[in-house]
Length: 259
Image 1 (tube, rainbow, N blue to C red):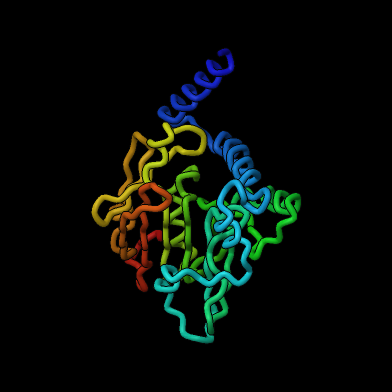
Image 2 (cartoon, rainbow, N blue to C red; image 1 turned 90 degrees about the vertical axis):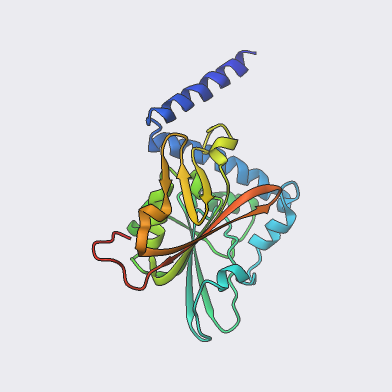
């Protein structure tokens, strides 16, 4: 009983700090390390047997084809090099690495890269794509602008401390004409009562991508304006609602744009 009371007090305190805007980056980092490492330790053990064996095989396949939904977003003639950034990739990116006739170069980025390297060594897993250290909110500290044909994030932005800034940074490292692709379960903050890393809701309203923390609502269409072409959709996966955004960076940005 005492442990349950302490747990409830801790969760209530975290909720109050979130509402007051006091949930600092240091606290976020501490929760990220604890929650994510625990999840991946269990998920990858025994070849993903108790998690998702098919997903484990996909992520460890050195010859995994680049997914059709991503190929459709990239204009790349045969013989060209395609550069893709996976933001918040975890220890093993799920982005495919083979596209016949093209040289596909995947960069997996995650703030827990070094922790994941140690985890994979301990489990005896060789990653097809090693993870590089980078914060989604500070990609330009690691990568040059306009570097990638596609920036990708799957079920990761709701774990960041500033998803809107992460999206803007993804656009900054994507070339003009390139695309940012977002795939996320909807409203994870609300569904998880804003516990742990689940501090953000990602949703769609019409053709707009909405980010909220239970207090403030951000419209991606309003924030980015004519700097991008935005397409959104809703679907279902794993028994849950999923929201998808395709954000095409304009060839010519409006004067004064920060994207």
